[in-house]
Image (cartoon, rainbow over all chains, first blue to last red; front, side, top):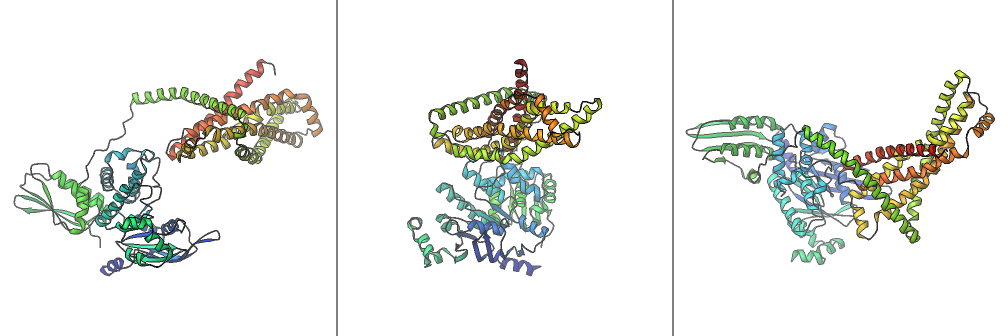
Length: 260
Length: 377
């Protein structure tokens, strides 16, 4: 039993091998390999339209793949049965680009939705945990009774994060969490992700365009280009890379401003 | 790896000490809650209170909160309860939870008689609002129409043609099929009952008058309300939800002119065409049944039909079509633009669009019947 636990800590939490995804005749991902280690915050960058969101959605299982295998928590998602898959889904949380909150439910009901589905918890405890989650993502308790249409863009992202964290997942996928936030809000968000990673021991898979996030929040960075991972490593590795797109990305005007 | 959680009292002189062990996670929440509730009742006025958490194997937000809940409820008197033996891994989680202000959740107000009466009152007042909304939209559409008359160039022909294809051309197969079947059924029922007193041939009169005056246009209007009215509401509603309509406004476009008018035009042109096709299909179906089932030869059917109906019947039917189209279109667009931010609201307004559309179509039909009767048509 102990050995099993040990192997789980050593093996990557996500292992993607030779993934190919095709829409019609355009090949978006072409034999892609990627490992995400336990407890790290992986920043995932690449030009617009390179397929960052497609990879995220493929791992979660929303986009069908042509070839390759995906293992999450050591479970191969293709050969797993329903209960194994459900078990995996219970252990991950997803923050969608637009929040994807249920528009006809209040914030409180949105956060409690996965709890109701997966846990047998009293209403009192659910309400208290909801408040705890809202506090964690930096929102006031008053927000709980509002509907998503009554929230600002930044609040929607925070509530969506609270919902993604509702079940205390081991792994969260964040799809451009800071896009559409003001710089201060985005900075807070990075800080928040860091804190949560520390307190809850999360592994974070973050698709982002935000250079600040890459510098402040991420442990490791993977770069997507031409349907493959063209580079993966620390921010220093990225800056040292000679790849033309990476050079442009990490040595452009905006990057210099961030580093300064 | 997972062991059952426990919360035990350790005797320690004057102090109240509780020792938590095992897995304190969400999956054990019911057990944990019961244990914490029992521990909260521990009486006495100890000099100090400790909750020892050093033996906890696994902790998540649920467990951390329950410990915090226990700590808070034990801290009633002058003595503050302490959490002891916190490992570095979990201390930040416990700190995080400590910041949470427990606020009572306001339950939605219970159902009362006055509340129900209030609801009824609001609904009744809402009817006036609905009618006002419809008249408002009619006015806005007419105003936009006049602007188009003055500046014909701003008319959106492409959009109108596109909607014509959607509501007219693509509706032809289903409309023709349904009206054909209804024509068959009317003829069959007519023959079946008329035959008993040897009045088979009068089925032609009934079919002609019924189809041309009423059934043709009414049936087609109801189908169009269900088919295109709902589509209009859903389209405009989702555009409203995604702020597309606000975007149009800020660019200096009038949503009525850009979105509503082409749809209205398409519908007003489409419904007479569909009503005509529907009437023809129903007559054809009726004639077929009359021939095959009732033995009325096609020549006899046509001869009888010519005697039985006049152009008036046809005009009475077809004149109603554009008016009904306008009613359906206005209802659909008002409902579409009234959609709020949620998916539920979109569903409610689409339902309301179809229900109100059909209701107003039938009301209009009744008004027309009275009108035509009084002018002797």
